[in-house]
Image 1 (cartoon, helix red, strand yellow):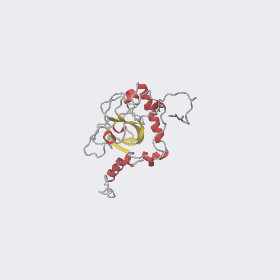
Image 2 (cartoon, one colour):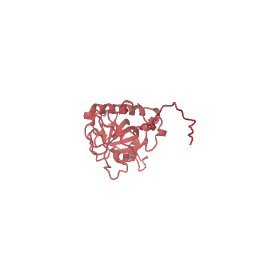
Image 3 (cartoon, helix red, strand yellow):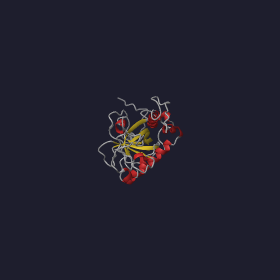
Image 4 (cartoon, helix red, strand yellow):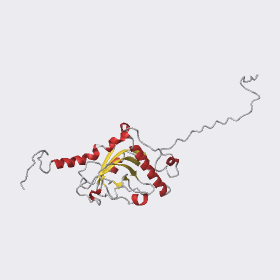
Length: 260
């Protein structure tokens, strides 16, 4: 039987093995989490200076998140160790009649843990709950200020419970334990990280503050500084005054003259 050569074969071609080519699939970049991010990760050296959409119209769910709670004592390390004093929100509502869900419970399940930005207002003792044990009385300003908030486990300190810690970017000069604080959370700054040392943690905290201030400085965000949520207590107080001295039940007229 005559053998027929393959017309496509080449006798001069070098002999090669039939090893299949190796195809390299690029490894996808993992989503940053507290377990994958440390102070050695490149993430920390390439952080954006502004976060969130340019206009509040594009915030998206679940923002804005409105929180109110009584400032409770935390671990005492924010101001002492980190130069960043914080107001801690309670884990649960301390007033059974309060329909406003406080920090930890309101955020749990809606957002990832990490650092957030927005505005906050500490209410003076006259506008806080009457059973307040505030140490700073009425010296607290009623103004609205930028804030950053940490919601998480603080892996550097290995916390055993979830906490909500708010740093209001204003120097009150006093503690305000026991006073009510209102918080308007507008967006996410970064996930919570673990750190090799305290210096790296402090560096990131300072970056968080700058990012929050830059993000809130955009003109369209001024509307949240004037949000009615912050001034509901002012309106209630004015209504009470209106129904008070020298006025009828509807707050109008009935001014009485007194003979001296």
